[in-house]
Length: 226
Image 1 (cartoon, rainbow, N blue to C red):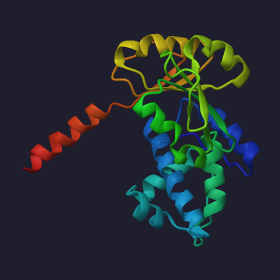
Image 2 (cartoon, rainbow, N blue to C red):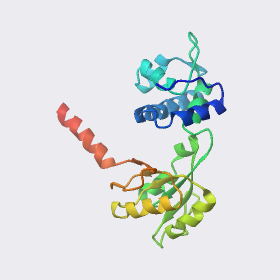
Image 3 (cartoon, rainbow, N blue to C red):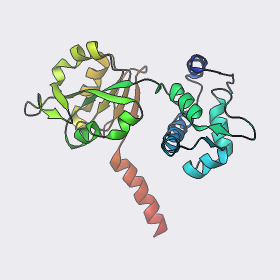
């Protein structure tokens, strides 16, 4: 296990660089869960918490929570627990969310439009800075205060915006082409809502969100119960 002590945000960034490729994906997913819980605690003006409190709020057992944090250094104080604001700040730094992350969105249909207006994105320092489509009826129109741009201008626009995250909300038949355009525009990570398997260079990180697949899994458990 990688282990080191970080006392500030500079150390946190250094620690994150060392940990890349060594931290299990489920740990990163749980870090995002902890961050959501900590955001709620901050809004409720809660100052300190214990690992048991985290277990109650997230369902992740306390030993697992402590193990997840141990990849990135020492956290909390024995007998006192964790300072909510400090822990929120440190996990934000680990996930690169201590600064605004610009995001590109391609596909301004029902789902894309909904994501443009989703307030939780801004709350966690994600900002959709440009939305693209290939439909002439949508190009130039304002959606949640953002003018829809022609996808043909994606590379040119991102040379200025320098976003490294892209969201795909297009039909499956167009997903591969859109993903390749995002890669050409220097996007390094993609959240794909299209029900399609993308074939991209290994250096590109893709997270797939398939509603039908998730519902199919839920359906399985429903069948078991019945």
